[in-house]
Image (cartoon, rainbow, N blue to C red; front, side, top):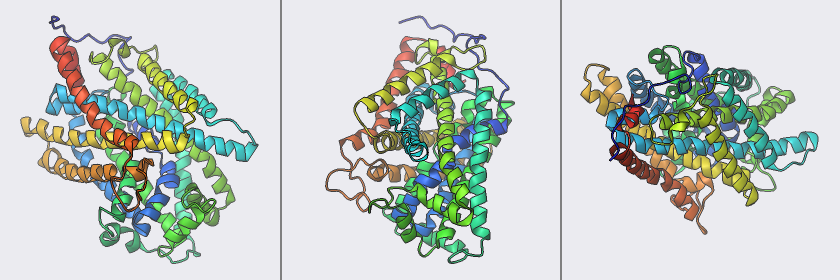
Length: 508
């Protein structure tokens, strides 16, 4: 057995640039990762038609409340642990190093997967937009590779420059949603007026039950929130992390919930609560295929209540929203690689930073992996949206909800050993409630994965039959749990055979 050595001391070549991010800088990254405009154009119309109709906005609020409960324990833990690894650092501190390493593998793959998903969606959207607007008929992967190069360059410059870019893009995006929502709600030409009960009453939200329409809407809502938990990743680069991270977490969750709930309600109101399903089908149908163009639902509402200029602006803002998400997830994945390299779980060279304090080696590795997958899908002729986007986004959201459950358990375990360092609400009750809600969410995501990812077994109707997965679907659904087992084995081996103190750095 190799003699145990102390964890390496930080040097200018391995330390992230501290004090560069405030609360708003972190929130910019997190809300950008949630890509509100993409959720409004992609997920909400599907949740309306296949889910609970006019009550789809309420489903987003319910999921927001569950994640706010999760944030209570998450924020309390952030005052005790400041680590760029965030999720797996919390799991490691609460449940032990070996489960922490297992969750690290799951978290890392989740962020790599969601970035790949966004790369696919970006390529598909830009291809259509450029062809329609300028007659440029380039392949999807050409636009994706251009975005890949720009994202890699911005990530290498340093995190605060990225935050400034995200801030501008996200500010315009959110403004367009707010303006459109208020235009609808203040209009005197609404088809049925404002009906809060249709969208937010408990009976309507859960109409049909979790095994049917309500479950479908909640599954799409859970998928839309991916990325909110990244606040703690930037703790080491923030100003006063023990105060900044908890506040940024609450602000990010509340902001995303308000955006999704408020804008989705405006869409329902603009189309009429009693006719919203039929109108959504009508507006999204292409060549007699419903939901073939879900983005047209929001665009049509914007055109009707604001003007054609807003519709045109939103069609371009979807692209900027996707790009902002790419940059946010690139930073998240690179910092996970950095943390795992610093801990000795992965090659230690991953802990190198450049002169600007950005994790340079980890950024390059993240980009190389993305490039390899993009090239594979391009060479094999896979569709950027139907395959790259849906497959990897489905994988990512299952992985992240699974790790969120582990984090909530870890919070309870940690504060049971440190009684009095957090309130009973933050250390016990809120985490317990979040575990219950997240377990329901995980079951919904897994049982409805065929609908989310398009991995449907032959002869199965995914809108009525859960668990109708083909081989690809089962592989993607089970991957996070297999990775957790692999990670725990690696954690055990590294702890016993390599460098115990360095691996323990995951939880310091």
